[in-house]
Length: 427
Image (tube, rainbow, N blue to C red; front, side, top):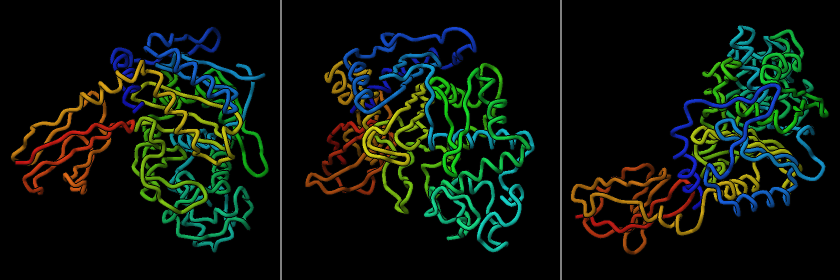
């Protein structure tokens, strides 16, 4: 029930502020926004801070319109402390690939061997040449993901044709940084600093971790990267990466796992796959979060969330909240449930919003009904008086033409999971 409240509280002020974003200066204070300006509940804010402390968080930032709403550090961690992004850093590598392509140094449709040379896999030459840079960006190389982080040619075994199998494969991903280096003729750290971090007034670095390469930075630098992506690749008037590339990174890149773009995770796509399994799970990646959110997710709960509809960036660095994980965890869902509650003054407000859901015409003679709500509608179902499911769908229109005249129950689910129940008469 919490997502609806956050949409109401955040989207209403957004109408006046979405025209521009604030970008913090290289030198000087980062402007802040008082949570009271957003009508955030102080008790819910305190509960969020306590939860983050209990879940081994080190640094946590919420930006709204680019301004700092919360900046919390725990234990001995400070504003200047550095931590790893883990697989959240994949999004930085994807960004650098886009910059290299816009500079004419890289073509993601070209075979990987164009940049790494022949023999970088254990596949035969014709199979190897079918793997393109695009496959590394989308996790569809067809290489053996059970080899983990290993980047040796002997570990790069072909299991499937490129583009036919989605599998979260760190070894194939890591090769992308070497592709960028070869294309740009520049070490990956130098390229990242000159093209992304220094223009934003920040520092980050790739460091080796076994055969992987991991980005490290402060929490502020992590949040700045999210703000640049929120601004569609722009930083205070300078276009660091083409907006079309940002759109491509944060949109479904293939149909096998619709919740994956170019190394970014996407919410609101209706189904998703996870690292290590070949199961397509139904539902949204993070049900309690806004549907338009996309995220950089890293091992042990390194999180960077970007929500365009709210002009919001959320950055979290720290140790694992609960059990060890590779990307998505229960922490995502629980954290967003608490963020959603920030704008909820009391349950009466929430119940009032659900009560405002309207269906018309009712009764209906021709079968088309409209569902209206002050909040986005995620889905609806129509059931008979006995509880039998008759039809279902999404959006604000429902088609009842095929149903026999009678009385039906309509259940409307808002984007937060809150339910409104209405009775409709089909004449």
